[in-house]
Image (tube, rainbow, N blue to C red; front, side, top):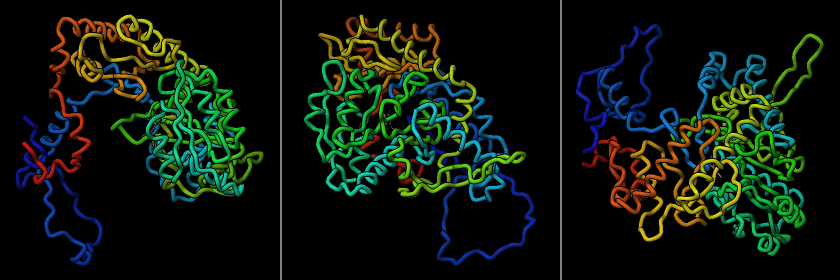
Length: 489
Ligand SMILES: *Cc1c(COP(=O)(O)O)cnc(C)c1O
């Protein structure tokens, strides 16, 4: 049975708001052509609204409730102090169009964040504008294109992308009219160097590489990969979604990457996945610095003896233009700034080391029960196969059954190059008891696969709703499902 919508709970005349007496002059309504004759809004008392949404929220699952090993998404715990700082009245009640003299605190924070991300990644300059990782990719690829164009190098149209890549990589290059050339992985899960060599020529814009890649593996030939791409005049794009494995250990800028996006909502603890907007800053090497979006935040008047510096806006010489209104998602940036400040350099290094340790612990314990296609030390995540010899159990079935054991499923069917992929990313904050309980659940499911496969095939049994049609929601998307005309029984 479906839940009643807020419209069905509505009853004429009920209300949940009390307007204060107006203390401003009344204004005539605008032209009638701009007004709607009817605006059917639900009418409910406050208590009805609170109960409705509280009730719906209990169907949800979140990292505040339990383990959330969704590979590649880095669903790490979000410390609550981040929420306190981003709600400070000085931040909340300022406006990006205020004169800069009145928002020096905000600008100082943005400036310092650019500096910290430079230090963490080894890049020369950073923009905080892009709204999320995919938007950062688009921004980065725009700069790569602008770089070649500025040099009069017009024949470069090919973007090299490994077969393990996230779908946003080919999408970003494709949106800019580039031809995507897929580079296979070799038997160890690295970029296939022979195939890469064959693809490198003077029509290459560059390569988009995630390292560690989406198999959770650090490319053992990374220096050679970068050299090959650079030798043919291409630029190296780093997909920084997996930065949680590298903090304080490896800097992509030092490896020779020219440009990389950060996913602040993954690596630096901002609620995401329906929990709020992300943020996808982009770092660049010297070669791309003058193409960055404008404005950057910079010091426009140096500090004097007894006056602090004046922060303001800077326009890079050959800027690609604006990527986002104002300064990007300021609230997300404040949360990540807080996270970095609270951890400090050693704390961030600990984050990555524990993230990697936790993933390796899970892999070591699980590989007796599940096939791990690339059996070598992993980084912050790993991929195993969700299938068992002699059964028709699939990865999806295992994920559904995990919900009965009160765990959020891992990422399914990604990367595409592993059969029945289950991609597991525990993150650094989980303790040994939680990791062991998760292993126990998966071991128990592996036993059920042979003793009681039906219970897996028909899972979940212990959730508010049973197994959903996985495809329907994507193919027949109804965004206004609360409207009476879209209701289905
Ligand atoms: C999450 C992710 C992206 C896209 O980032 P968004 O912030 O979701 O837009 C790109 N590449 C990889 C490897 C990712 O995990």
